Length: 234
Image (cartoon, rainbow, N blue to C red; front, side):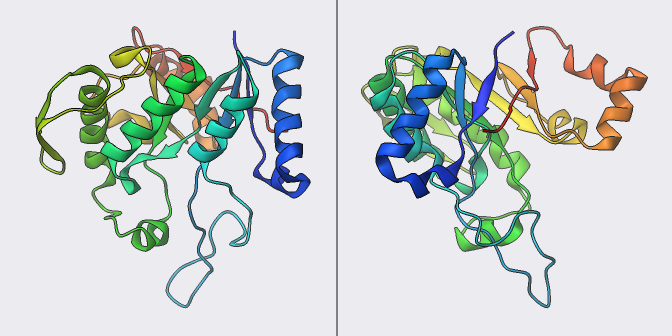
């Protein structure tokens, strides 16, 4: 069993030195992984949309930038996202960012991705909220090509690349772990891609009831798909 910590964005209030001190302390205690929560913006309630599940002014530092900072001041702890809202980001840029952090950290990155839930955030980033599941499936395949192939030729429905290269590759190349996370069974059943694991966090009561009935457990115990449910916050 491995235990990861969700790194708190509110640590920014202690300044850069405080963020560094906390990251080093988490590593020295012996935790296996530091994970970053991801949202770029948070919407206020309006006449046409309800309030989000988090306060609009909740401080959220950019996940990949924080991981790069933590990578520079730690030596062994794993670095991950839980989860990066992949369909609202450009996947080629994500591949470059993740490969770079993995390279500079000595192969410590685990990429956790999900589809998100906030339509207004997608709108602010200029992406389509309604086809996000299909685009995430394709984006994961696209990432694998960028991580693995010396020459990338990819002709998808949503993303394309013709005779392109991305270097340097990360230390693990195409074996860099990609985990998919969601709030319950429905978020994960649509997957039609090869991933290393499925993360299920903050399970709702309905998911807990399914787990007790056995349906949820049967789903997450599919061969070669371990599930992580450990994300204590600090």
